[in-house]
Image 1 (spheres, rainbow, N blue to C red):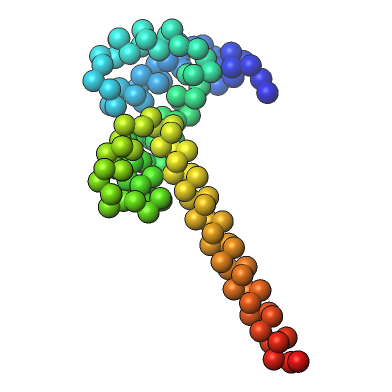
Image 2: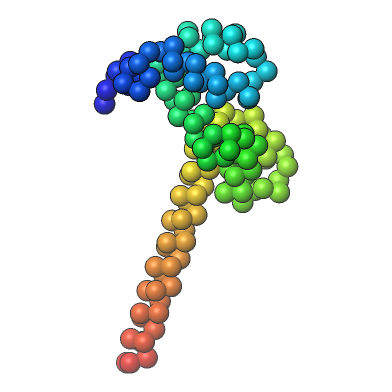
Length: 133
């Protein structure tokens, strides 16, 4: 796996360009002025900037840039959309953590559906064999 600096140079040429893109993505979420946010991000490591960029890009592309939609999707995926206290707790989580929660819940639901379908098909296959005896 290439070093974070190599990834930054390959995708963005310079750290400044990555920070500028992040400021554009994150400026809606924070009350902090853009210049202060930019200064703060310039002191962050390349690895953290890349993770932050991945999370912010995912929120923008899959959830129309809305953290509230991400929170709703994570709560719905876990079947706890009506639990106001839980949704309130989710709002305090970072975007990256919410994305992970939502992905894990979707994966769990998909695996459960796959197991239920395989058990149903296995049950149907065994039933005629039992009648034949």
